[in-house]
Amino acid sequence: VYKRQIYNTAKIMENGLKTSKLAHEGQIMTLKGYYKNLPDSTHPKTEFINEITKRTGVSFTAARNWVIYGMKPNNPEHISILSEITGIPPEKLWSE
Image (cartoon, rainbow, N blue to C red; front, top):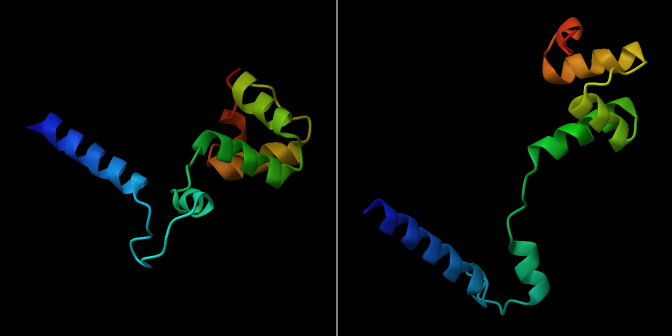
């Protein structure tokens, strides 16, 4: 029964994506309209690194190096910002 429910939900979603009309407006769907009506995807890890770059002014690569490879920023203000974003005390951001 559980598999059937998943299949039915998937079929409904598939059928919803194939519709050629906007359900709420009755207008003919264009390719551009179809694309615009798709839900926005979220990428929490990328969004997190983007938040770091926005708040610190460093490149995406630099922020990624801090997060992925454990490199410490040279600027103490950047460490404070990372602590503020994550809620992790500065002394606990990296293992020694």
